[in-house]
Image 1 (cartoon, helix red, strand yellow):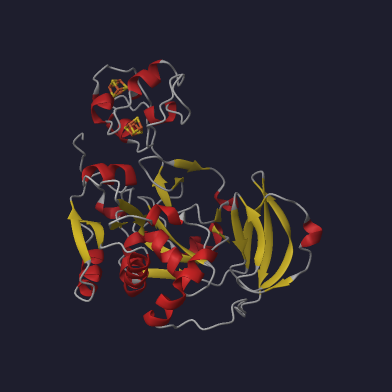
Image 2 (cartoon, rainbow, N blue to C red):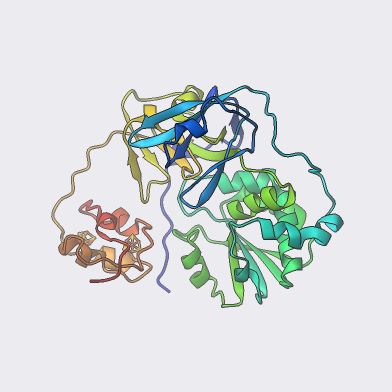
Length: 379
Ligand code: SF4
Ligand code: SF4
């Protein structure tokens, strides 16, 4: 496969090694498709209550409280829940169970967890945990490795046991020292687990690239750290996710950090946690390699789709003429032709494109090449 690259990083936007919690919003906002307000009016609900399905996913309340209305923000309707801060939970059951009990009724529990295609695990001989972030500066996985180490090992072990998978390999990057230390502490008690430390290359966190880089066969199944953490919560603890981790960073703030928030918290609620160096900034979502510009921070709601928020100094970067250097073609790990896509003004779509943003990053003329590549089939 093509040689991957090490990105030069701005150390000033590295996040703090401590997590900040913001778990008591006055209101949470959950995106909905239906505007059948009558179904929801003034209802009292508990945390974990099943509210509705949205984009194939069931939405549960992250707080207990009362439904007080529907609010439209940037062409999206949100169900508004006023938090009563009681954290009354829908769940009644036993949350601490031993591995022996769990092994006995694991089959029954996993049938209820619909987010995973179980056939992916059948007949496999190696389970790979992809613990590598696929964007520079995002540190969410590191915090899961640090604070949920036992849960991650327990879930992987139960999966390997249930599906008769002989080996579990945890992949981490060499510069993610905090994850390596946390994982190494537990390795000794799980003889079929091993740690694979990989170089700090981009985009190694992408599952497709990782598979090629470490030459995975059809007999391997790859899972992400978030997927295992979520599975543990649902299958083992039988609870619904009520919070998310978000990396908040960028060169316009002084104190980048990972924040733990209730799902549906508005961005404006957590802005007070940050000291700003600049009055004017741009907000990008989920990464700098394939950034999504956010316009209207006052309307931004923190949902599971948001993994990172970057407050960046405003910079004027003007795209200039293509100088036909060929760097974009050379760097593409998927052998797409970003230059051709640009020249044909997006008429050529390449479904192989990972949207990793390397072609845009490398282009000396600052042409936003990745935006020209669609996901449809080639024409
Ligand atoms: S990297 Fe930029 S300047 Fe070079 S060939 Fe590609 S589009 Fe043209
Ligand atoms: S964004 Fe797509 S075309 Fe550009 S380098 Fe990545 S995979 Fe290749």
